[in-house]
Image (cartoon, rainbow, N blue to C red; front, side, top):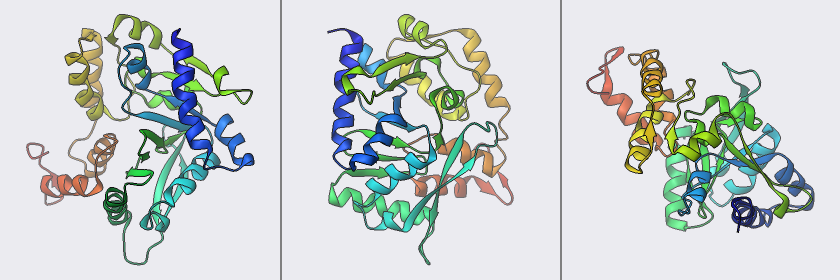
Length: 274
């Protein structure tokens, strides 16, 4: 079986599972406005088990639809709404933002309650963060950034992640894998190539160790570019640090809040504590 056939087989199964939750009209949006992207293709090429299937939406309407459909498996999630605003750095992108409709609980408190409930129920919803809604079968519906692949990929750290698979309305077996930037070259050489414009350099640095352990290499130029990006972050700024920590997709809001609380001394952050 070729790589394309294997990708179509694996990812079409994920779409078939999701489609059971949508009406006929909604399935059109699912097939035309969503795509899988990111590190899952590295696992498929290496013939390893895919841990996470990152699903992105090209339109805010479809992102809101997916969030609405899958949040109802948890009561507390019904108190959260997903809103969107134009990205400050890229006007062709939208950023999703969770908003609390509860008169007593904040967004962070509701997310923690959702995750506690999801853990106890063991339903379809497995974990919720400010970036994504994770389902029990490994699908992560990313709403932090919403837009077509070529725009979403401007926020990615490494080139090998810039791969997208788009389903075909004519048949899931006709889905198409597209390689953007230097992704194909990076995957072929098993070499990390830093794109130079990640939004979350802390996440990029933490993932660096993972790939080095897997035998990947990284060019000195990419290490230098990472260092330069890190130097531009105002690590003394609470908002900047929170944004960096949010780049770690699985981080729990309570953990993030505790890190910020322990790191703050007066109005400033203590970098040693950070």
